[in-house]
Image (cartoon, rainbow, N blue to C red; front, side, top):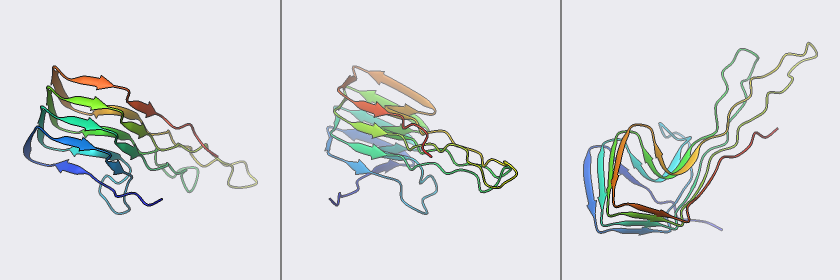
Length: 155
């Protein structure tokens, strides 16, 4: 099944008043600067959501990878959220309901030679209705029936 990918990005100052954002879907895109993270709303500026509803969204973080050698860095699984905040977020009279976020899977370390050398494993990505990496405030905001799953490490 093909899904339409939707995303609202706020990189400056943005006030959204009275929107009903429903059924958004997002998975990471190759070549994006922060392509391992997925969200319906990604904030890198000053975002205010007021009198709004964010519902029925789905976000899937990219799966992690093991390092190519014992000393090479691994890449953790990508984060996923209905709202991913990396700057300043304000929720006023806003409801997040029925959103599903799945963090990307991590990877176990694996043997790469007969000498028992291991490739570094990686952690799974975080998942949340609102994943806050900076400053957030909420006034009369509500969260109902959101699902957030952090994927386990895979082989």
